[in-house]
Image (cartoon, rainbow over all chains, first blue to last red):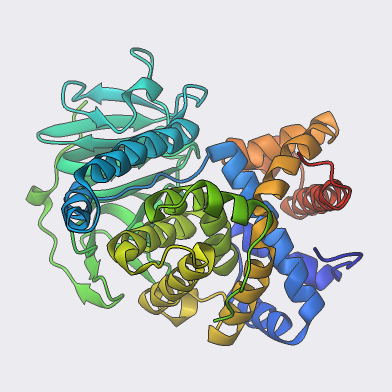
Length: 267
Length: 186
């Protein structure tokens, strides 16, 4: 631990900016220099960010261990030549138990309602169904729309309609949503500007708008703006009628607006 | 990458308790999350990198040699995934360059064994905060409010609230340090 070290006001400002995600390029450069040149500052930084991580873990639980089914199948068969089938089953069973444990801690029943379902209730599948109330709203958790459409309204008033197959995550933050796979449209009402979708590690930040978003299995993300504008991946601002994609290697490409490809939000 | 010849404390307990790599992978998720978050700064990005790290660990489990230091092996893979993620994100999204990533990663690894003890101590330390401090931490982390939105809601400036949160974090760090140094963590 960083015994008796007191960060300077300047360093404190950098630490706060990191934890709030507000670090600008000048601050990034300054922090980088401090970390490289000042060992005590580096150790304090690690302790500070470790605490930040622990606070996230305490309030949100361990992030879900999300392994594709195909990989699980491969693992068991891959190990069968070396291990007994029994051990293979034991691993599979312990994995289910452990993953369930993580799911419970992330999406346990104490989480608050963050959205309501407009329609598609017969189509939504939840990774942890026990974490979802039977009536009255939706809690944070990871879900799928296997087919058709699923239509949600977040507590901040943002409406989202997803076209299955789609994979998403409701978060405890009132103005954020994670979209892992599929096609969706978001309609953001006045007052909810700043609504952010995280897709493929990129942030799509609403600036007062209606937009469509798709992400494929290769993590290629496309955004099309129907009304207003959005900030995409913290690098480009898209206006009405514009579309942009970013591939899995971080390269931008132009994408033509095809509004018919996106589901419509119905009243 | 620096490898530790021996492990002790929680890390050793985890390694002793779980001899198969799948269980080791699952039992070390908190440390891996802390490791990645210290390198990327942002929770959502850390979750993405951790997910990618888990997929690589999963694919390479056959390569892990039982009896060797699982955490050192997993951190090495996580560090590589952080670097790959930074390349994918583009230069303007970097918090650190390669040298700083390496230094922070090494510093974190040296502390990783105590991570679970400190996480346990955190629960007690939060209870020792004044009510308004505890409430602020819950709203910031549990409810996911940004400092700006919290400041608007409380009628304070964002700067003032950020300083208040920083002091709470510093107080928690001191409390955790005291408890762990004094052996108060069971």
